Length: 129
Image 1 (cartoon, rainbow, N blue to C red):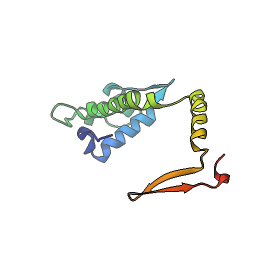
Image 2 (tube, rainbow, N blue to C red; image 1 turned 45 degrees about the vertical axis):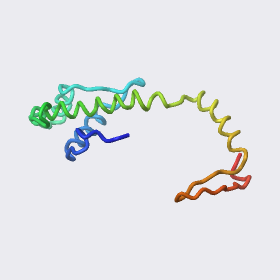
Image 3 (cartoon, rainbow, N blue to C red; image 1 turned 90 degrees about the vertical axis):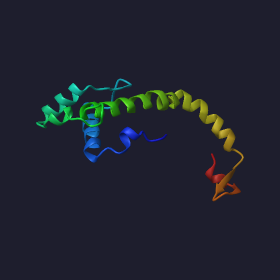
Image 4 (cartoon, rainbow, N blue to C red; image 1 turned 90 degrees about the horizontal axis):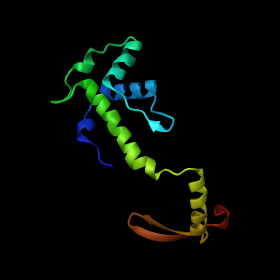
């Protein structure tokens, strides 16, 4: 995954806002990744006695600071929903795939590549079930 330049050079306080909001309001609920609005961010900060004036200050040419924080949280949610979640397995899928792995590794040898040198390593039977 390549870094997104919009978010790559953000200062520490930006990442502190992302973490505070995500941990305070939750990352997910009932298997769905949560998304927020600038209003949600403002209400959350106010609840803890923090100021919200900075949310309306310009962060980029076309976005306020609050909108930039929300844009990152939405970007993260999109990546998780589109790239990560489709590759996760449930318990039944893991059980079905584990038998394939067991058959593959029964040979008790592996090909390892270290510093562009490939070697065949035979594993002792005690390490393979």
